[in-house]
Image (cartoon, rainbow, N blue to C red; front, side, top):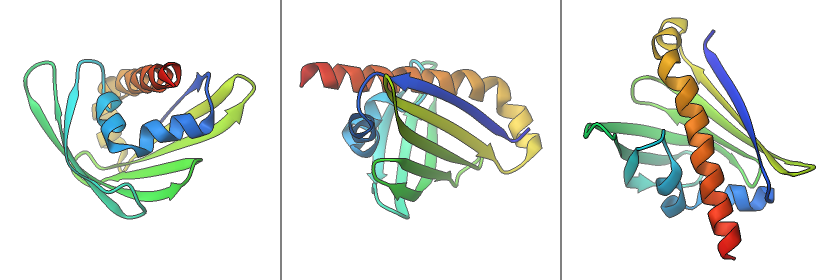
Length: 144
């Protein structure tokens, strides 16, 4: 297996979820697993825009990341090509549902060996990412 898929229902509009992804300040607040924070060096939220940032782990370690926003179809799809190791392609899909928005999260690694090596981290981290996205979206929708 090289692709990890998960999804989450968020009880708000597709546009509100997309806003939490497309706004660099908001993206920095929720991106990454529980306990992580981010420092964005560059976040060009546009097709082929560069995204360079450091994730700061709860263990005090820093994790540099280099990505490109490979595709953006507002407000339905964002594709991130992670160009630093480990290399992967993340597709975030947003679709209206009966209760709000269905967020589909599909992370495809370049090789089965890499996917196997990071699976124990990626599966819980993706769930935590969606937990944090949900909190950010709902916190902002309550404030408005």
